Amino acid sequence: MKNYIIIGLLFFPICLLSRSHLRPKHSDSPMLIAKWANDNKEYIVRDSHIEEYPLFVVYNEEHFNNHILPKSDISYRYEANKTVQGALLSELIEQLVDEIKSCKKKFTHFTMIQDKDFNHRKAAGLIVLKFKDYPFIVKLFIETPESFVNPWCKGILPIWFFYMGGCGNRHMTGLTRIKNLECIRNRLKDDTQWSELVDTPRKWFWTPKKQNWVMLTGYNIGGKKEISTRIPGIYAIVADQIIATEDGTNFDKKRKKVALDLCNHLNMFIDPHLDNFFLEEGTGKMVIIDTEHFPTLVGLKDKVYFTSYVDWYLGLSKKALHDIYFRLKSERKRAQFRCSELSLFSTMK
Image 1 (spheres, rainbow, N blue to C red):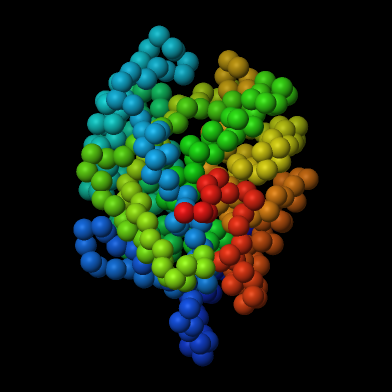
Image 2: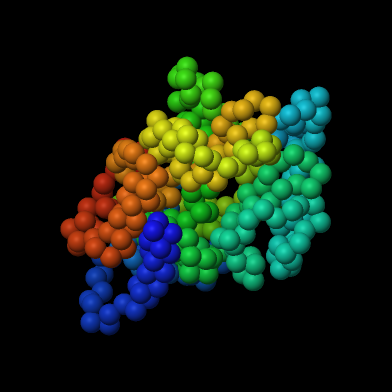
C-alpha cells in the first residue's frame, strides 16, 4: 500500500506543468535567478514554493571551509595504523569529475554505488561512489545554473522534494550533512543509552581546485525585495566507508523500532529510511551513514513524532499532497515569513 502511495505522489507533480493560462501572474510572486559568477546568462524560475532558508541560508561559507578534507594523512576507520594522504584522495576526485564531464559511467578509481538522482548527459545531480583502493565513500554534487532551477532533469525524487522543501534540492541539503552530523553527535553523547548503541562516520567537504560559483538572486522571498548568495557549483562529501555485518542492512521488526525511536529522539533530523542505517561489523552499533538534514529536505518546520513506519509514510504523503496541491493563498504568503524550529542555521543574515 505504501509503495502505491509514494509512486502516485512522485508522478502527480507532472500535472503542475499544465498551469492554467487563466491564472493571473502576480508581480510579487517569488522568483529565483541562477547564473554563473563569470557569465551574464540567467536561468529563471517563478514559483510560490520558493523559500529563503533552503536556498539562501544553508550554505555557510565559513562552516564549509572549516570542514574541508585535509591534505595531510587520514587514518582508516578500521585500521588506525594505515593512512592515506588527503591530497591524494583530492586528486583522484578531480580525475573523477573530469571523467563525469566526459559522460563516462565507469570510472578509473571509483565504483558507482548510486546515481538515481544524477543526469549523466547533463552531468548534474548527486552521484555516490566508493574509492576502489581506499575505505572512503564520496558523495559528489554537481549543478549548473540551468540544472539548478530545473528539478525535472534529475529523476522523480528531486521533483517531489523541490515542492516540499521550499524549492531546494540535494545540492543544497548536501551542505547540511556535516553541520547536522555535529548536531547528532552532540545530542547522542549526552544520552547514556543512545551513545552506547549509535555511531557516525567522519565526514569532510571537498571542492575542486578551480571552482565555478553559481550566483543565486531571489526576489520577493522571505519578506525581502531582493536577496542573493553564491554557492559552489561542484563539491563533494568524503566519508568513512562503514562495513556492515552479514545482516547489517536487513532490518527486522525490532531493528525498525530502534531506528524510528532514534529518529524521533533526534527530532527527525535524519531520514528514517532504513537504507540510512548499518549495523557495524565488530562493534554491533547502528551507524547513521546519511546525515542529510531531513527537515530541510522535506520542509518540516515543526517537531513531529511518528509511532510507526506506516505512520511516517502516511504523514509524509499527506504533507506532500498538501504542499503541492492544497496550500491556500494565505499559507503560501505565510510560508515566506515562518521560521522553523528545526533549522540548522539562523535565518538572520
